[in-house]
Image (cartoon, rainbow, N blue to C red):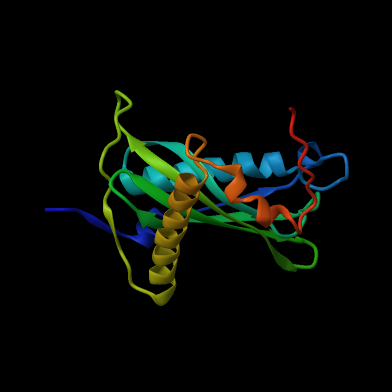
Length: 182
């Protein structure tokens, strides 16, 4: 019998105060530092769902929406949005809170594809998801759509089949100039 889990069973929330050592040259929190935290929470959420070690297969989307300031409390909320045979799409929402005023802002949304592995590095099956709310159904359906679009993009622009002549017209209104070596 196939096992299914409620989404709430594997959700993970972490909070961390942003320090000057996390900042870039502009005085904002460095995107690379946030990416590192995103990867950690994606791992924790996927491992909690699958009850096994997981690896990052791809970072599908990272949208930096608003800058994060030094001294803000960053909270990341991760949920399993989709499961395949051995893969899971982890959705992560990042909010920053000004701890003096209590003002919160949505700073980042991200989707990581994680794969469950055994001790030998082989992919292993993961439990299915029990979807209870419209939001959960929407997130699962959006993940299916993103996966389909990704596969189409990979196939359409595969290097061995690609013909640039077929796509030159779409470059016309963009900041590109073609100069071919003879």
